[in-house]
Image 1: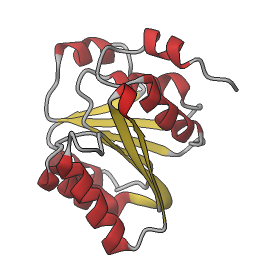
Image 2: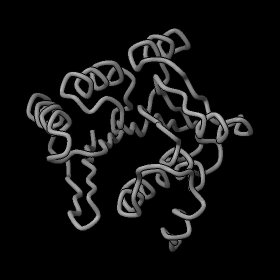
Image 3: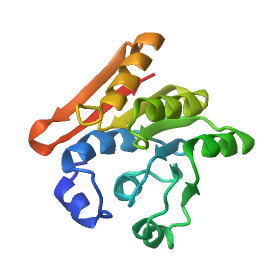
Image 4: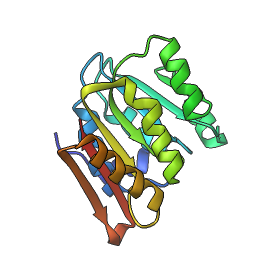
Length: 181
């Protein structure tokens, strides 16, 4: 199915997520099947979450975590009972996730705290819940967020990840790293 990224961009929530970012996120979301889980760490105004919701298949669980709850996100979520939003820190949300059964996550999108410590911590909190062949996406994995770059490089080296790729477009000032577990 051909995706019209410009149309998705027009219909999505406002936020900092380019059509190039969509070209990486959307195919990963579309791979999810009934019963799979999408988890987004760092939602801001909800643009990437709204895009995921527009393209996801039936009976895929949509989940998001952010320590902030912007007015834009509140407005977006008010009539979206199919999205489980946790207004708390990533660490607290991971504890709640574990208490609720710790279901396996198939696609983890990390776009929260862009410091090294924040990104590394998000990985530590959520890795125990990753499905064996799950996918992790990291937004802003470039020179604008050296902490994300460092945390991703460390993760790849420590876990000896064989399948990972960097998507970068300087003309659109955007980047995403993808790791396939």
